[in-house]
Image 1: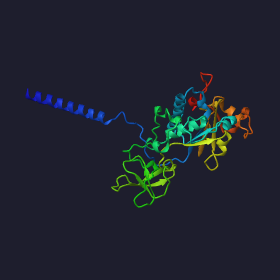
Image 2: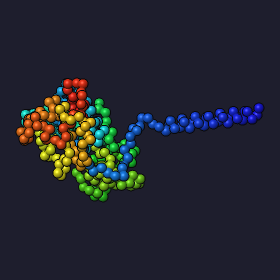
Image 3: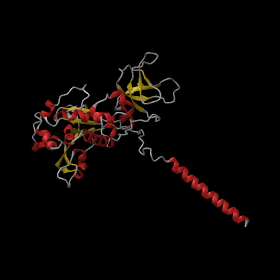
Image 4: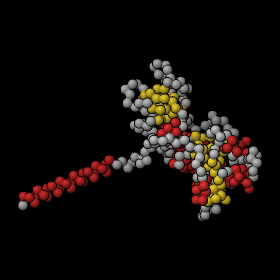
Length: 334
């Protein structure tokens, strides 16, 4: 009888231990935290991916709120697929001449290209820098409704990322050398380089455990996190007056070595992808409501017509073959 009671107690104790262990494991998993934590890679990434699209794609949205939501949807897609450069081009020469505005005005932009660029840049900027870099503007009225991009450079205060984005502040270090940077930490970061206040910088963080008044860091190129650690570090914004200047004003020496144009008259993406070679700088171009053909036809600097639009690209691709709708919007095709 005594042995039976001992066995029962042991069994009950084992079950409680197992139950507590499982509870602890469940408690350790915080389902409210992001599951995909960016970690530095052994090898960096040298190649880049660029996307070009016309600002006119937002003109079909009926209100400022809907335009903002559309821009946010595109920005999320760029971040998810590691796009390094976003080029916004004018689809029509007439719109270029008409849509000139002062950059200092706080009124809503009449130029769709400017509006799109402002929303894209706002979302790409880490939250702790936005107040310093973006004055109040009507274009950003509904930006608070948008889902965050949550890119690797949108670092939380407690995270010890090897790189951080920051903005140079007015306050000077006691020594007078270099500058102080707000990098979203409890303490400011001191850099040895003199940089004007209000300028955004990329920091290579030296040591998070310092007991000094300020953290120490080096100012590096925004490309360094990608090239050295393989971290996606957001996208650059470039404006182009026409579709031809998407190609001729490339920031990369030698331009883009692989270019892809998108059209419902192109080759099925399933067939086209197998033929794409290794690249250094890839460019994917999307058209507006009239397609890429309309933008090419409106550009006087191009020698080809709408009928020869595919000659401008290495690959002419249909991203949505056998579509069930008569029209495919740019935000869906991308």
